[in-house]
Length: 270
Image (tube, rainbow, N blue to C red; front, side):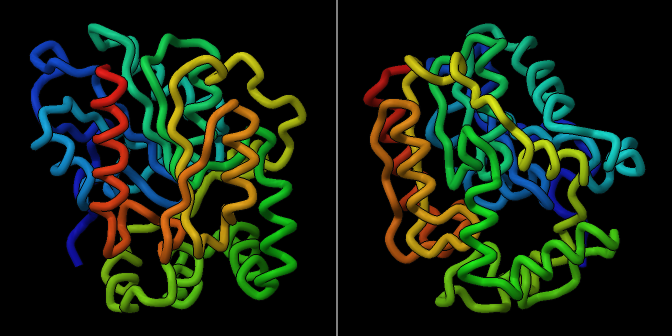
């Protein structure tokens, strides 16, 4: 098995340079237990071909990075700071596209940096993970137990069944999860705790900024009810993709999601 695409690089890029694009740069922020490679599978090539300048950030503590051994030292604010460093290099405010934990990072980042727009995909809600975790404990108790065991023991994610139930709908062949499994990793315990202990949502973050809130019908980790709640908090509407699971950008029908985002960005004319 080869290393994940972009292993060892802080930022993966596709499309024209930010200064050469007619559009705002797109910054892709990955979710927990993963890396920027989740965007390299489909989304970076797709949006690059559409003329967008694309940057997918490997958050601190990713496999192949010099700070991998420090993973558990990093919290959500460290992730926000890492993406902010990339934002500060750009010639104009970017569009943030965050998945799961990456959506939570995007919400916090928008409190401190100017952004043109944001896309939240199966995002951790503004109030954190407490609600979705309770829902998962009630609906899939063995799954949340397995996730908690991995986090508490520090053992690598090596269960194909756990990965498949967590991120895909039942129609996706398990061969897909088997191929991707070695690319996943542990997540920072500190960052996971941060997402469970947020008392004050980012009131001054994305409110008033064009935001597209997306979810998936068969998402076990961030069920549609919480996606609708995030949209309501931000004063917008949610769009739920039928038949998809949590990892929308890796699903068989990923292009439906990509086209939805691209069409929305063109309507905004950013």
